[in-house]
Length: 619
Image (cartoon, rainbow, N blue to C red; front, side, top):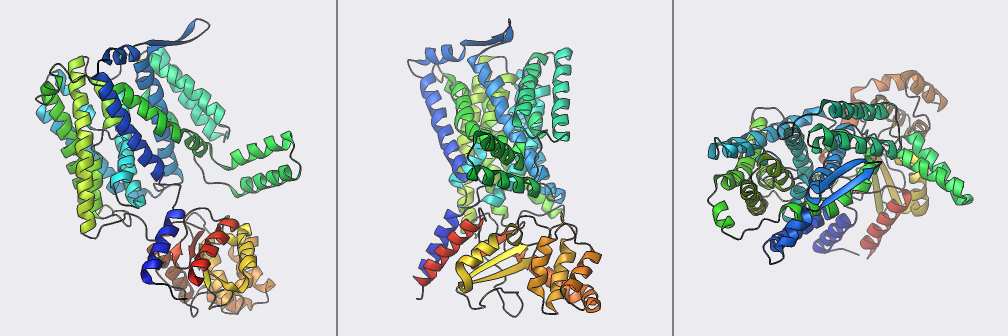
């Protein structure tokens, strides 16, 4: 039955929504967090300007002590939030930064030039604009207020006012805010800290060495890291440094690695044993092995991300956004150089500094923008970076000893957040009108399946198509995990399966293995070599491949000669280029028909999405 173009588009839009990638976006969490943050900030303002305002002040100045054997920490609730809970916030940022540098989007150092230039510009220009309006006196100490960006608020507003799909822009903005965060936390820890206690500082340094040692020796349990971070936090408080720096640095020291095939297989065996014999000892062993298969960094992020988004940052807003605007404060703030220095620095300085820094770096040939991100997206994202909120409010409370100056700076931060969000919304709409809609990787297969070129398992005219970009050292590709067998057994000849090459740089033998299967294809043995190599992934040297050719009954001399044929290398390059143009960034990556599948790729999930596609096509 024929399907209209509009209904087909609606189907794929719904398909994309159901299978949108969870790893990099956290879109719903961030949008919900931003909405909650706005609501809590308004609540704090209303409370602080109501007849109950005295309770607001008294509550946050109430003292809370945590002691053990006569020693402990005593702070006001306001200080517990700023110097305690916010450490967890910066710890989570450090975790995410470490992951991105270790196994995420920042592993390719060549991709850092443009966002680094943007981040540097996004700090220097705002600070200069602030100092231009506040060149001397106590007010000049507030220059640090405008250098930071509230990462959580920024990404939340991006989810609210930005493109429907903005994964690539999110990565770009996250990269440049990493620079902001590291510098801002360093400024907090050094410039705005009290007199240094060298003994406590020595203890804090020792804790950092212990964290590095835990990572070095591959400790996989989270509890030792958490225990050391707690001691580090106390030592940093006692040292006179602001505790935020402890959160950021400790997060950077928690290791992030990709799942190891051996650990995953061991976890699967333990789970099968528990399924067959559900005893407490087997349950404990299965849980421990599952934890070992995922890095401690990602496990901590999974646990803490929701808490920071929905509890810690909103509580911080409740404790810091409550400025009493009565008694003429609002009028004084609107005529204050501090207020307008903050507003101009964040709204104008961030916009100009980030946009000019990034686009200037591109013009100088230092790098390029991420695929899918246009100059209009950069301008709009730069505008949203003017939301300093959490970091700015924290620095404002440290920079000015005078309550009046703190309140004027707080008004500036709140006003800047509103203006930056509005400017960002306008610029995103302008970009969309000029053809820059979604800021994401392509999701459509750039090179349609061609039976004359592609290797196809099943009926070349089968109603369902599953394309897989793979390399032969990838431990989680469909053939290696057994997923393909399950999927193919379910659909039979209804399904045509098409493997394509994407040898990754981290797999040194993948390209040679890809050439080997293409050389075998010239002698009519593509699938035999394809299947064999997935069972010999640890033995893919040249001698091994020649031995496999002989094992399959191929002509060894012809096989070796074909391995050196430039035409085979060009065949692999064709697949690699089509992968890049289709938004593929790793293996395995699947396409259901001509649409990139985003999300889990186990057999059950692939069968489900293929069934949905088949139902739509037949309906």
